[in-house]
Length: 165
Image (cartoon, rainbow, N blue to C red; front, side, top):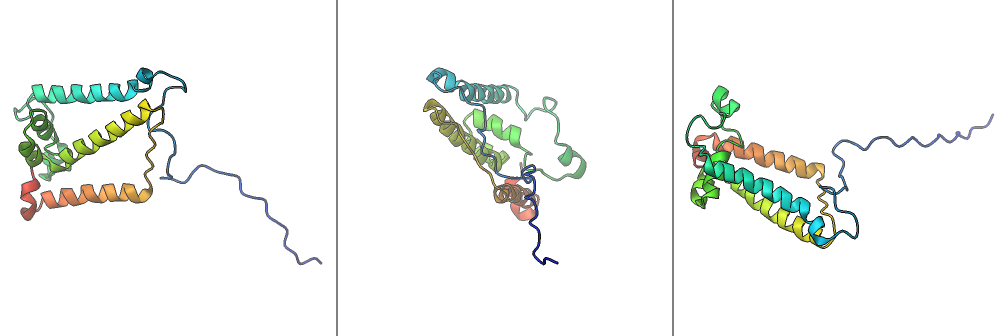
């Protein structure tokens, strides 16, 4: 009898593991050789949508009751979620009142800044014909979740009341 093991066939490639980094562009890019105007149309369209949303929130005051729905978590538990105060923050930000925007939701204001930087990088890369690729590994998602959880916990504790809307 022969004691050498028979080689096993290689396993068939399966789907990527969950939360695997994705190397695809965030948004579809214009075909190669497209004009600069066509390449930058999607980033400009996204900015137009964001400006429209901020314009609406700037016009329809969230401080007046009845215009926007109430946060269900706040209504049923009395706990501020990470988004509580976000509309009031956007309203104050749109009116140029950064102190009130930070007071309503500091995390949202930080998010506005992150969006502005990412949008500018995206626009510049698209103008140069290079797609924007953002690779988030599982550790990044865990870090984002931890920041949101920490912000939520701190703003609901007595010593973190300055972060409550």
